[in-house]
Length: 178
Length: 241
Image 1 (cartoon, rainbow over the protein chains, first blue to last red):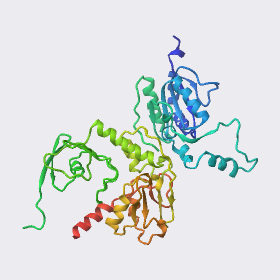
Image 2 (image 1 turned 90 degrees about the vertical axis):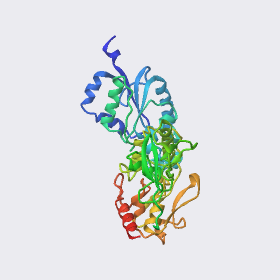
Image 3 (image 1 turned 90 degrees about the horizontal axis):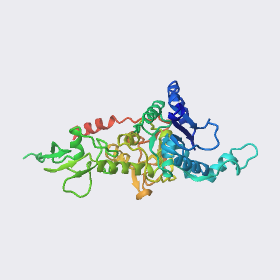
């Protein structure tokens, strides 16, 4: 077995979130170097791959399920991941992403693309995936194994969760929402 | 004969520990005196007990249903269980329902980091909410000169109602409707700014456990509550009687 095969296959997924949770992961700073020795990042916002890979050991999911694309993706991710970790409040509670739920998707699109547009105001129908009626937490669609709360979760918390997972332990993060 | 009723001492056990209590005490009071933790959100020492949040439910031997410790008086030989798997599960369930019923978005709340509800989620080990969130559309009333009521954050603990009635003596606050329609109101459901009974003392804001009542001008995480006045006022009034 080569070194690459013994490494933990790690993926990170960015659904409807602000990327703050990914930023917080990067805030683990120099510890990332040690982490990189033990994992292969097989998928993430900056990984150039066409499709979410098979046989992923750990996937961190940031963001709520907000569009048809999110829903399609989270089901694929769940099917191909051993341990699914929801990272941050949007993935766990809906958080800010779900604040649109009171108003409805149409009102949000109208506000963003018509009322606030200065040039060529139109609601996009192509390329951008259609919004679901409401944004919902990940666990309402697929089973989740670990919940890491916070907006964003502190870097130390993410690091301790990842360290536990790399050692084969199931983490039980005690941290507050918000 | 003394005008006061003679004190009757009761003995009971809480989680197997023998405790002595006065007959007029509640299970919650006795547990606190004995450093036994029972989670609560609506209870606040200095105010009457409402039994509103139900987090303080306990098991009493020989009683089929769970009883709220804050409004259940002790009796002789009572065997109370405060910590059990079953109670922990129900308490988490109650807390999750509170979160699911309104829009408690901690990250953008004025009381983020100073909130009793947020802390309680951590204390009770609530990892996520198993019930579907309701996302109700709730009003925010900012008509008062200095304060705001945000119904999205309200847990209907009725602390505001009690402090206004029992301590300030104004009874501006009350609760209207039932079930998910339930809402705290000022006067006869008029905008707070138009309330004729409100003295503007702000006690309701300080006792509110969440960001439902806050001072104007506070941004995210800036509103921490100051409750020191409550035991002081209660003590002074009891002394005067």
